[in-house]
Length: 469
Image 1 (spheres, rainbow, N blue to C red):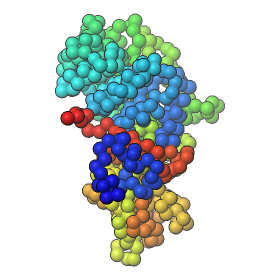
Image 2: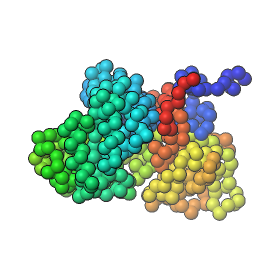
Image 3: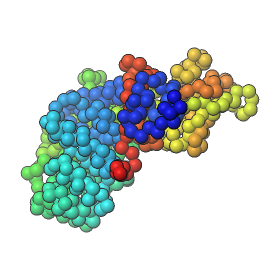
Image 4: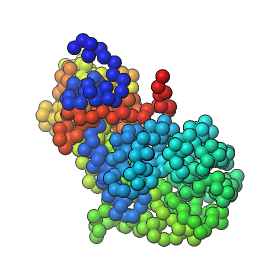
């Protein structure tokens, strides 16, 4: 036993051997948990919606960064797989799965999700040579990047797919619709396309303005606004593109993209905003804009697991409680409880902090995570009162009663119904950040048994895959 207790676990296989079959309360804490039943439901729900509306979908993998999660996002239909990755390390990690998709007859394209920096060209080109023509795409928003895509083509022996990055109001990256041809960017890009040095795909926008939303109507309006911004960019620069080509318009962020689920199965009950969005999507899919054939691609990532931020946007009318929807959680241990007047209000100390939860704010409440009610619901009569992570330090945090979406009594003096040594489950504000703090997920399946580990999924963390000695 002593030898096993001190054994150094290094691979996902080691962790599977040691922890599969155990209860999640038996895991070394803090531990990152992923519920595959919830993730499957969210992935399939969005795949069904895009199929119903006739639009394309590009799944962002930056939230979970796992091969198994990509399979859920891609679905089982024998269709093209489109992905976005935030780091080259993620794309390197994906290589075995890309080969698997190709061998099964599914074309695949992976987009590197930031304007192409020169330091990453060699790595991307090397991956492209291994995976084949058409598998790698990039985005640009500056004329200096044109030499980077030309170098890619030289090293890979074929062109990368290229999106022009449009800023539709979020101001993270890209050029505004009226300034897309800054320094003749569009003209020079199309010249490279005509020479076969790049393969121009279309326009790409990412707008997270919907993260501040609190209704489905707002999320749908933000999606339509982002679409209109890209159409404006197309109209402003019509004379620079060849009119006999097809142009893809790629838009999205999880709240506004998942808002399309409100359009499915609700005929006759759609709001005016929903009808307007549905018509706008239909027009791009079926019509011609400024003389171009257009196709619409939506992209999103954290929709696959959700988190407190996502639920606070209320982008879908049918969202359940945190316990019903959020697939990612952190198991943590209670260190101490302060219920006897030691402080202004009762609190508890947990052995997890910023380096296990993150420190991402959420507009719905003043806290850094929400405690699963299973830890305390039999001990409180008020269904609106929730335990939240109120304060965080590096390796520990403080839990107290909190106010969620205007419900509950934030000043309650009711004791904290937790015990020293108890394990609690915390739902993070931002699953992307929380996940990045761990090397793997302990996987459960709530459709079978919510607390038994059934698998371990390795994450493609950091910026470079480790090289074996």
